[in-house]
Image 1: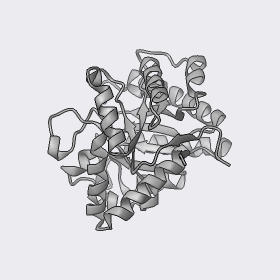
Image 2: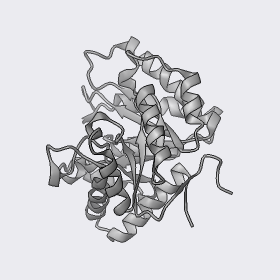
Image 3: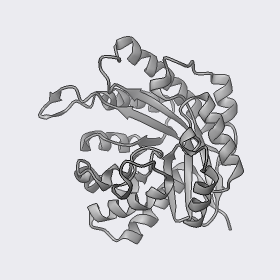
Image 4: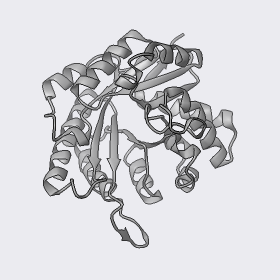
Length: 285
């Protein structure tokens, strides 16, 4: 039987695992974008970054069959907003909410991220973990390392290393814990560690113009990968400098197939199946 949190979807070809079409960048044409997504058979997870945007994500998902929501507090918002467990849980219990997040660790600006800030982010992440475990829903995790110093001839993936330890500990108590590491920028070791913890890694349209991720995309098992846009950010090479939207997931999937040297249709079907499995999306008859 389908899990209680399962979302029912139309006959889609793609799932954008992470977008923000509830943001103000779409205030004047969100319905047009959403209609284009439907025409191109694209479903999407609309991701909240704080309470207000999480509420908007849920409201948008409730209006459209091919949209779903994730609710959470972004690590860069922890200093400005307290995590309201009561309000966030009330949102998370909605049947159109298929994940918890975006939450996580962001060490990208070391001057602003001291040990106190890191601990605050970890404390809030733990609350997301507990909520995800309680509702049996996957996490959507934002993790951005500082890249501050090289170790063993490779970048320092500090935020990923801390996150891996936190998830290892959490899995002891919550063995069903799972999720996606959004906008993955780590190394092969980090990817392997997350996959071992029942997490997928996802890639954005940055892969259409940057070659930094080719080796990772080839190394990660296709069954452990998702496609996303992070729209309105990082538009594909065909639209560099412009606002992004979930239609770019088509470019992401095609580029993953190209980098891996695999059949585009096989890659598309596998990535779609991965998203359906993680987010419990059930095909509408």
